Image (cartoon, one colour):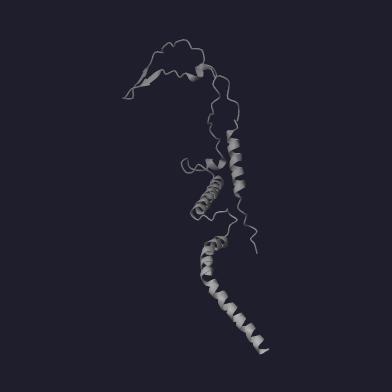
Length: 179
């Protein structure tokens, strides 16, 4: 009787497809970056300085040189933008966890699948059976026993055949002499 609440584990292909889908979604830009932002947005004007003892002094603005011509446009840089908070993350303490339970579970399952693949590869390399996965233990044992069996037959078969042939001839000759 099978338990209806047990869900089958996803296959390796399904997990890899899901990972590829997530990576593809991450690589797609959300919105094109703005054209050239104004240079004034990049300049930070400081008008106050704090001394070592905590005193504040005001600074006179320094005239800046005229803006040089902007360099040739570069390819757009990939920027990391903050991810909006999820409702479940707002309820947690700020330093507690970065991933939700479902995401952490999916990541753990994916890593477990990858570890299983690595274990299988290591097992195959430690215990090579050649011929791939379709080769069985019986095939390996048969190959190992073949030279031993051949040696035993080379040694014992002539004596066995000679004994059996003599016994058969004796039986056949005994029937002829009695008949």
